[in-house]
Length: 436
Image (spheres, rainbow, N blue to C red):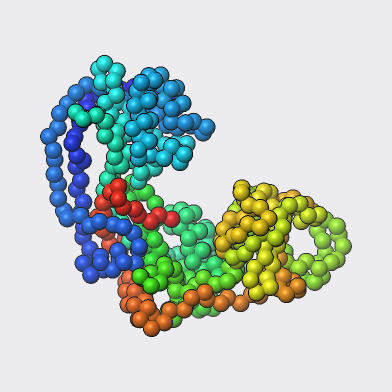
């Protein structure tokens, strides 16, 4: 929607930042280490600079699907000269190939219709500034004042893990990240029971106006089943150990195979040597598991491997077959489509998206037919034993113990969902922050 406004322009040589840091100093230093984010602590301060005022016209726009920055500005009748000035100057710091629908921008024109100022928002944490100075135009990425709230989230399963997270007001990104931590230990399609409990400590990032930006790092996660089986994961990284999640013994939670390539699928048919086919009506082996999920649900590679086959194959419809180390081969059938760019011979990493749930071939509804073959024999995918990819030892294990104790203390320090502590941070052009 086109917006024209005559307002008073406050041009500043700098921005006003007020960042407050309150946190136990010891854990503040630890937090930077475990989160792996590039964060600059800011002492409580406020500064202002000389402000001058001029009259200007603001034209605000939002990119639509299929728009380029130039075509969007044309729609608002911004002159060729001004558009050229904006694009040529922003090209120094803005990658126009990465622009997305819903990106926002504002163009400020002086009383003569000349470009005075332009702001482009490629996201809540990626804002670019173009302004006229005595020396010409200057472009920069705007520093942003943020608030990192480390919070505890917990709940009890009544219907599903997804429902339990939603009742706490948490979004799907956090749910997926939590499931991903335990992807090699727990199949949330088949192993969740009413009464199971979950808890986690996670960073939540807000802008200074208390607007939620996104989830940062999950620092600790716990899942307790009704039979008192507890599975835990603690985030850890060091100069010698890449970031990842480890159990209380220092064993990495990642393994050679994840439990399910569709974390939110429902098992509609299990592994069996005698099953009546729902369409053909004959009894024959079903040497895999069916995971029912909506059409378009992403399917992950259950292990690192290479594409052996992808195409249409009889009753399986669109199917992908992957070869893995150790004589394993996995099959993914009834897909609606394959991941763009994937081809026979392509290498995939564990948890890479390889395709999307569909109902092609002989199928009564959208689901994934998932099969695993080992040394030429089909086996129940849920029977594969998890083996950790990494085990911490020596000095790394000792360092992890310190991290685990601190995070475990945090996890048990309060009952119920609540903020544990808050830290003010400043995101500058030279820094980044992790978001799920």
